[in-house]
Length: 181
Ligand SMILES: O=P(O)(O)OC[C@H]1O[C@H](OP(=O)(O)OP(=O)(O)O)[C@H](O)[C@@H]1O
Ligand SMILES: Nc1ncnc2[nH]cnc12
Image 1 (tube, rainbow, N blue to C red):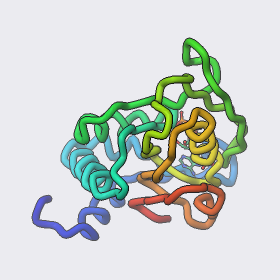
Image 2 (image 1 turned 30 degrees about the vertical axis):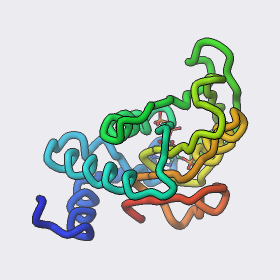
Image 3 (image 1 turned 60 degrees about the vertical axis):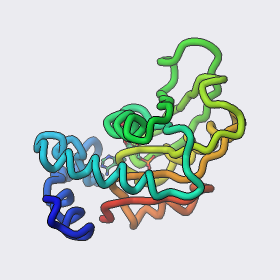
Image 4 (image 1 turned 180 degrees about the horizontal axis):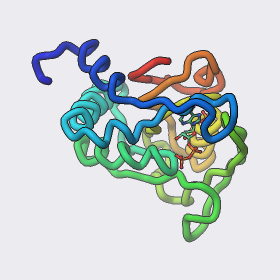
């Protein structure tokens, strides 16, 4: 794998992603990132590419935040490699203590995200991680929450981008995606 250039590495990862028409609703083509995790060498390759990409972000990031739940597959791995804290942004009702909330619309429904007040130091530079951007509702919600608690979203790092849905347009920081559909 290591002899492949970046473009070839991304092509190998993309080749592992399975797509399911009409899931979870008619008209949605579901891109299943879990299919990558079923192949350890390709999961390792994806993890390495994410870590390398996160390390190159300028200004350097101080905290990794990831979106419940598929963002949790990758966010902690990146935080360990960069030796910086990991903070979860969870769906409503899952986090104890004082939280801030943001409701939003996504490709196949509505939801509310929450973050614990005090989980990220004020003015910290944050990288937001998720598996996929569709309409951008979830990512936009996560970015707004990070701002609400006084931290600074520097960029979002996403595995899969559904470009036709133009989700990145609503997100108020840089969006870096590895695989475009
Ligand atoms: O750009 P959007 O239209 O907001 O859609 C993208 C979001 O949808 C999926 O999460 P989902 O809410 O289905 O939860 P899950 O990760 O727990 O499956 C995906 O993991 C993203 O977080
Ligand atoms: N098309 C899609 N595939 C996988 N996850 C999604 N989340 C929102 N839209 C999605």
